[in-house]
Length: 296
Image: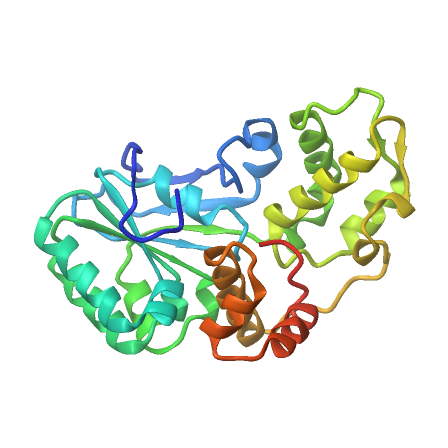
């Protein structure tokens, strides 16, 4: 799923049946090799058979596979993504205009990526359509459910069907298996492996970027170490500590999400990103360091 509004992507998925099921979150389009370890990472709660206009909530930290999961559960085509970052950078009026046009079209699925970051007026706009239970179906993507407040929490409560994805920091024991799977998936030499010391350092990291961040670290290591043992000093410097890193507060995670989304929109251009966010480039760099933004 491309994180660009008005882009359509092809997808299909069977509606979930009336029971508790395991689901397979992933961070990229080709995470087939790591499917096994990830099946334990999240639970989908399907309380009843879905009608075409019933909303779906997909919750979890960024990088945990929210976007792919939302795509897999989209039951109507085409799928259009509207993001909170677009609303913040382009303005609420543009978001509202695009959403209204999609509602009038009465087809497909509209994915609202970043419910927890939307202003109240836009949440009310989406809630009005959700209450009608009409096509297009709305899939809401958000951070952890327990962090939602106010109108966002009320709208999330309208979703009887939901998928909740766990953060990688809560699954440290799975990191060795995930790393081994990512090494295989990257086509690395069969002699390449991560030593217990390197894996201990990776397991101590908080992973605010979740699977996306872990994959980026593994890819970086493979670029420099082609064969043999990956030791602690082969890891990027920021990942060599073996002491757990403090967890970000919800407000910090929200700010981090907006900055990362802006960096992606402007393809990593710090000047354009800072201008769009209304801050200086120096402040942007300081926030990136404080929020540990190394992958975007």
